Image (cartoon, rainbow, N blue to C red):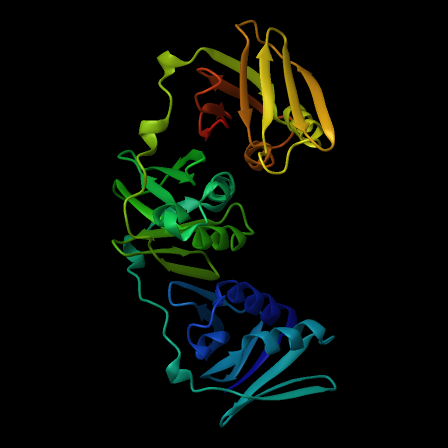
Length: 366
């Protein structure tokens, strides 16, 4: 195999594929990137056996086709430090040689037959969704996924396709829940699967063009997403996702609906949280006619009190939240975003709405 590559294009493909490299020692061979050169194109593939990412390399001239395993860490280091426009990649026997300008690197390589192939997927049955809205949906929900293994089904995002084709993403860790509804798929059936959060976060980073169409395929055990240059496949999370609809407050139970602006609310939370107790993480929010008062108290360092004017004329309600859970959501939106917080009482969860397509439920602290 012999290939001439634009250094920057090869580096970008290697860096993108390396996002799915195993973080623990599963199989030594998986520390490699599988480089496949065919007439007219070349691809990089990486996998941790649950998640796989295949990236088309831009700016490639294939002089002779072939397949080789490239040691990921070393190759990325070489490409990052090289200051040349093009690199020549040649495989001779059990070695790969990278040349460019005055640089030449020889590295031993492993048998490509020991590396798993990308899974096949029936793309003719896939639906499509625009990349921009999909990225927004992932960003506004994935942060709420659980990380603890004990909450296994919560380590993924629930991907629901409704009967009319609209996509809904839901994430929860048991203390907060983020839900957003996006545009309709061009085709497909109503279904519900749990996609690992790592897969969804990786997908978001693989979508630089907001106008690009993303093919989406959902099967009983795996999901796949494809753009012009990238194909991502993932095993699904097994188990039953929590019944999120059961925890959403009923509209008739809401006692207060209070409009807020994301930027002012964010600033007030950060200002008050300076004095928060690091153990309890307890921030008081007291809603009263015309004013929200945020306060925190720390036995060692003192207390804070911040006032934020607001349009509210109802009865006073005081509740307590971990400020990080509010800030995690607020930073996903521009400062001028109009929101509404719905409250039943200080002891019940609060529901934040941003438009008609986003809801964020947060549990109060006692």
